[in-house]
Image (cartoon, rainbow, N blue to C red):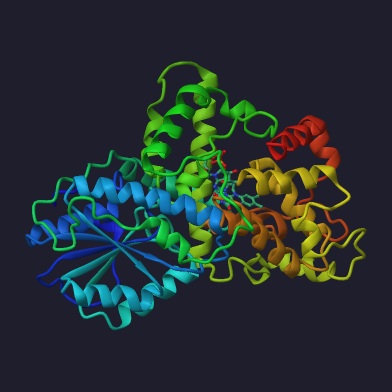
Length: 463
Ligand SMILES: Cc1cc2nc3c(=O)[nH]c(=O)nc-3n(C[C@H](O)[C@H](O)[C@H](O)COP(=O)(O)OP(=O)(O)OC[C@H]3O[C@@H](n4cnc5c(N)ncnc54)[C@H](O)[C@@H]3O)c2cc1C
């Protein structure tokens, strides 16, 4: 083994043998070259058989409600990736359409000897892979390049909460939180390696998606692997020591803002966790507390979200809620609501609550809502809709449409935590919420300056 990959990261998705022919890496969730175990594994297979290596990305015109904002971010990242792969003599191909047809078709066309893909717990991606695996005449491997501890290994079942998951992850972290080798220049050239100025026409690829302008791109996040690394370094050098103190105040820019890069796989969580762990060793207790708090979010909470979506196929509906929450939801289903808004009022930030409206506008105008506000925002959607089913539908629709980091296991588990008590416990009973944890305007007022937050969002809106 040259890549140093732990084979617990790899799952064979069919029973075919690896043949002679190029190795194809179907890149999907982990859109980067560096720190990518799936790419390293694909290269290892190709080197063992002295075969070319081809990376292929299948662009799906409709993906969980993604809009121009998210597609533009992703395509610009892929354009950089294509150029960097070329420097490593690794071919890149962009396909457009349904991967269930396109990926096997590409493997036939290239006479591939093996197919490698990365890991995602989301239904749409697991369904694609099942269908591709069912009649693929070559070996098909899945590599978990997104989680530090591979999702299947971290736990074999849905975890109840962070306190049940944390000891399992912490036990395995010393084995998995390692450095990651770099891929090497590939010695066996592919017929698909484009020469000279031949590159993918990324503008044409975007135009073919017919996305319209209803959710325009945002300027606050520069896309791509290089930008992701720079954002990571900037956070560690400038903000990490204050993370524990500042992260829950939406006026301060105390979070890392790395979620768009992590979501698109432009930044490896493992690389980030290694860099955080090593940051400024011995520089004092506030840094140590911040490192601990950050790793709790990045490792425990983030990987718990993958666990939830992987083991609970109903992760985006009320059927995924724990029993106590479904029971309390039934008891309070017909409680009178003080306000009920249609989707258009939520979407247009036209509720009676200026704090909620500011949070919605922050997401619409910047592409990312502050983490504290995300909880308040989703809980109020529960309070002001007809029932929890509608609340789930509205919250997921809005989050996935406007957030750069939407359509992510963190989003589905975050919404389910807010509305249905997932990974939480029962609290004191009250109208509408039942035993699901409540958050109030008054509570926010005691934590931060609401007027300052509203003004800050207004400044974004005014450009
Ligand atoms: C209703 C609701 C919706 C959410 N939707 C999304 C979403 O669409 N995409 C998304 O990535 N996160 C989502 N979250 C989780 C969390 O709010 C974001 O991950 C975080 O605010 C992202 O900003 P950051 O990178 O600056 O976070 P930081 O505070 O800097 O955290 C670093 C990283 O840790 C992870 N993390 C932080 N908080 C959580 C959490 N509560 N659960 C899981 N992982 C976490 C993320 O990967 C994050 O990028 C949602 C939470 C709620 C309550």
